[in-house]
Amino acid sequence: MRREKMAKPRENKRLASIDILRGADLFLLLFLQPVLIAVGKVYDAPWYQGIMYQLDHEVWEGFRVWDLVMPLFLFMVGASMPFSFSKYRKPGISKRKLYQRILRRFLLLFVLGMIVQGNLLALRIDVLQIYNNTLQAIAAGYLIAAVILLNVRSYGWQIALTFLLMVVYSIPMQIWGDYSLGGSFAYMVDEVVIGGFRGDLSYTWVWSSLTFGATVMFGALCGRLLMNDSRRAEKGNLPGVLAVLGVALVLAGWGLGFVEPIIKRLWTSSMTLFASGWCFLLMALFYQWIDVMGHKRGLEWLKIYGMNAITAYCIGETISFRSVTASLTFGLEPYTGAWYGVVLTAGNALILFGILWFMYRYKIYLKV
View 1 (cartoon, rainbow, N blue to C red):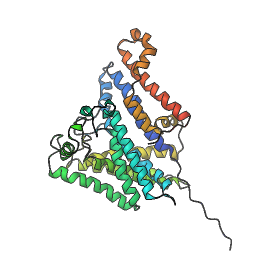
View 2: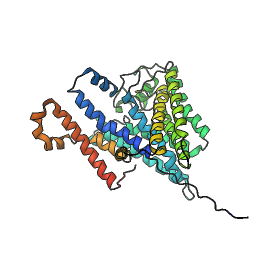
View 3: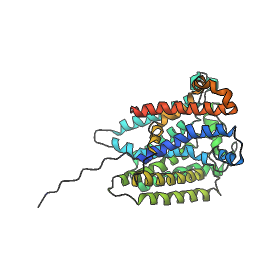
View 4: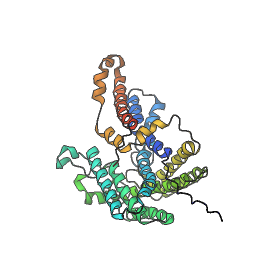
């Protein structure tokens, strides 16, 4: 009998759709929205103000386009986790080392969040805000999802634990308090745990960490499907599966909204389902178009944001380049009038893009 060579296991190929979708999210956050908002301050046409409405957070109950930016950021963190974790599940790498890596990433993200919006660099205890930032939501969600992924291999149990996180979140929210800000159980937990060290009081954080974890886990569940499909020679069915799952989650979130309102500022379970459904739909679209059909032209530049997402966010949220733009364009102010604010905002965004382009060009990726 002829002995056939055993096929080597396929390497986990980096999916362009993940980097590009993550990049699109950061581009919207750091470039497009600030510029469009600056234009909206000058251009007051009703149709344009309708766009501006969607580029701001819902005041309380409900959901706008802008409310998807942060959930998508968390979802994409989760989508990358099965790929990154598979590299560390090799002989010689102990769980202890993995947990050290996870804990280090959690702490770094949490401290970066305190720098970005927590006034840590002010070096004043009276203005310090411990937990009030997207990076810290990512840190908490990442930690929860990492513990699940490392200890539970069964896909079915991972799904069950994702929904359990939302159930545990929702039960006390239904029993104690209501879904107003000051009356919600999540708000009460924040008052007890972080008290005066909170930032924006229109958001909750500590109890909402459970649903942050669920959002990251939905991304990880999606990422596992993507990883398995990327190993196959022929692709084509998965985008449809992701789309069906996305529609199901959107409908589930909408239906649960009659019992538990869709409130992004509380990160309710209904909001988690609703937003994660839209994330699945976006991932289906990007995976189909980019990785299955191979249409990358005109989209590759989004990797400039997507492959240095944490760096982009930290720089964009902490450093203003408007003074640099003002120094270089001061002669335009008399000619642009009220539009000069648009020039400054666009210049700020372009300088940030230039820094990220330089890092991407020379393969400088700062990973937390």
